[in-house]
Image 1 (cartoon, rainbow over the protein chains, first blue to last red):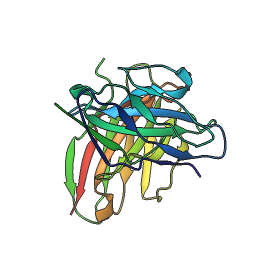
Image 2: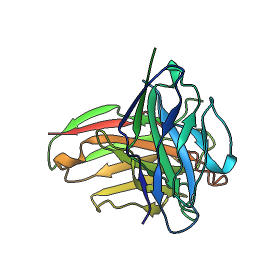
Image 3: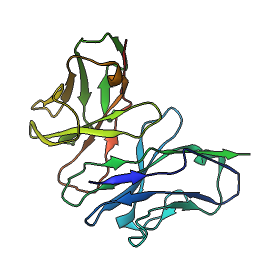
Amino acid sequence: AQRVTQPEKLLSVFKGAPVELKCNYSYSGSPELFWYVQYSRQRLQLLLRHISRESIKGFTADLNKGETSFHLKKPFAQEEDSAMYYCALSGGNAGNMLTFGGGTRLMVKP
Amino acid sequence: DAGVTQSPTHLIKTRGQQVTLRCSPKSGHDTVSWYQQALGQGPQFIFQYYEEEERQRGNFPDRFSGHQFPNYSSELNVNALLLGDSALYLCASSWTGVRTGELFFGEGSRLTVL
């Protein structure tokens, strides 16, 4: 069975502070990991995927297979980063079926 | 392109009733997935439709059923509603030719069961 855990329901930081949103997963094979984001009054959308090794809006995430983690990081938080963040996992043969974590609300204070 | 559209946006039902939710995928997409999002939780996969057939199914009872039409739009039906079925139901579309994990979500249909 595949499972995604986001241990923090809420993360509050000041503008300019570093941010790390934690994500741990369990999966027996080689997973594909994603971060989805939902800004206020907007729909859920893809932020980044591990396979692309990309930086989006200053966010990066590294897949650590040894620790089964995929933490989302940003060195300097901005107020516009305030949103709900969901970590998600796709098994290799599962098409685009995603297993989501419970989400972390990021609040960036001025 | 309006993206993924869902209807209705809100609805209220009573226990035991049946409900049908509708979804039109993003233009060019052929696969539709349905997710249930309870308050304070992440989306949970219900099932996925491709070529008018259910391709995958999550851990949901048979009361949850669906359909996909030739134009790729989809319906989610829930029979014998329970209080616990109250949730936001999200539709997501994708193109099966690109297995990137990127789903395009609708704004959801919020179901309240009284």
